[in-house]
Image: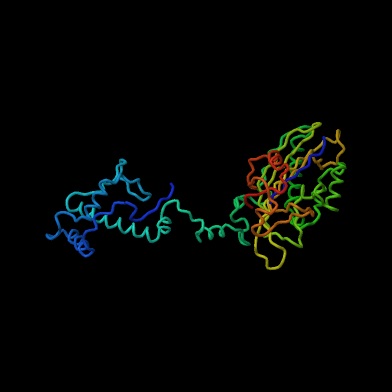
Length: 387
């Protein structure tokens, strides 16, 4: 299931087969023993070989002559130049090929009559939907304790802060290049303290991250107090921080995969405005001892920070004011809000009963958060295509 929310602060039809129903049925005028003797004589090329085929052979030959060219099969050899290999030879060799083709055709028709489903299974494009191999392949893509990112694009992503791209600093707004560099460093500290810190992921209060938020921004401070005291849909700490209830969930290892970027530009009143848009992938287990089933919770979070000019805005040096923050979570819970990410384990993790709307790939990052939020309007619990 997916949950998305955000806050911006003010400022060919089949036919019947078989003999009968008026079909032509000629040529069965000799016994099976005579037919087999004829084939042996024809194959050996001896003097006793008949000079002309029997009625049954004539029937096969006529049908082969009248038959239009068959489409090239998926394993048919086609010589260079686009021509097709000759079906009939000349003289004695041609007769052998002809008789052999008739016998092979009869055998194929017999097998098709006895086991049509088996023959269809040999054909290209045949469905393997029920194939044990397909089931085994699906199982092979499931995450494990040894490979918690198996079967996920995050397997190739970088770990922690290494997956987040930071720009080169440059003088912007009221800040010099050196000050911008320092603001980007503190932005990096905030991302680590809010979404990657091991203690915070285990449910601890994110004190280091909170210390980087402007204490003079009263509406945000009120939000933070309410979010940790009595979390609700309106006051949800998951908007800014990633946390799991340690009584229910534990991390599968100490690696969090990330992909995202930080950008900056001039904000209001000459401020430096920094935007962090990052996707975090957390592999998790149930907290009980012996649990081995690994699930993944995916959080895409966009935070816009304003590093204000203290000559124009009441702020504390080294802190930023929040402009907006938005989050899109997959397999983190949807219906209830308790201040923690609440993953499901098993088939429900990708699609909960309450999931609605078109499927969204949580690993896809070409869609902006603006567009993602518009798509999620009125959706309730969205539906993720994978975790």
